[in-house]
Image (cartoon, rainbow, N blue to C red; front, top):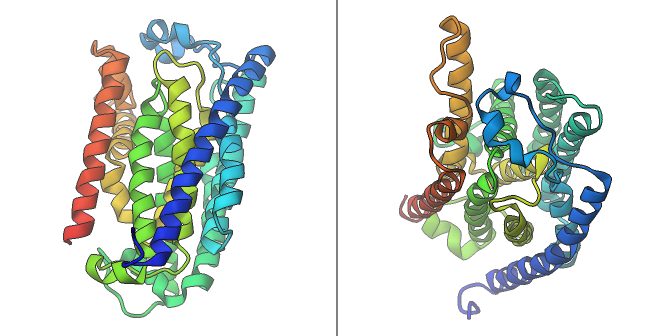
Length: 356
């Protein structure tokens, strides 16, 4: 079908489809066993009192005890498909290391919450420190891979022909905001049954297509994107994750049978963030991830307002999906609308990619 265009694209798309399908099969094997194990070991969502979540405590009372750390099941269901269908080149290995690092950070956070009965887990400033160290390592690796072309990451706002140490530091700071911002925004969004899942799926779908296009010489001229040989392997990884997330949504939709926890949220957010950076197209996250942007901004605005305006709040509760809940909108309707907005953002992003 694609032989007249590019045999590389045909091969990649085939592996993407088979990887996604195998992930779905593995998912329907892994998730039931994981659920049984978590229930047996009583690894579930902890109940937060009214002194912490106020009026939300009554709405979310039924969620207490729901098996969590579902990120482990997501990881287990994609390992075999990725190893079978993806070639472990620089792009794939970097993406996997980053997502596993952040997934482990999330697992430690979940561990403290569940087994040490700590409401907040790892302190926010400590999380940011670990994410800053990771960013420094990623910057070093990407600079040695891309060389001076790493400056193209900032091309929409800075069109610079040469690179120096100041610009490299600026890129590092920018990368930190992308990585830390994405994984923490996904984590903030993961507050309702299925919400994080339905909003991140269109993001992975878009970057899967972008990875295929960026790895094909015959597509880069018409789309005016960077040619990155081997980057199409990221599309295979993303496709496997999409397959696993479809199964996860089967169990995570309201009323949720399992939650992804910080383990899954940080792992998936990190994979999305590093994928956008490796593709040299991080600004597309502002379009495809509009829900994550709004969720993160609502939290920032709420905290800033509370501190600067003497305890006054903008929202009934942040992040904003809790504001809608407390306003009387049902959980299912909030999730459905967020999913529709994410699909619209996916379509808009494709339109921008093709037309600009």
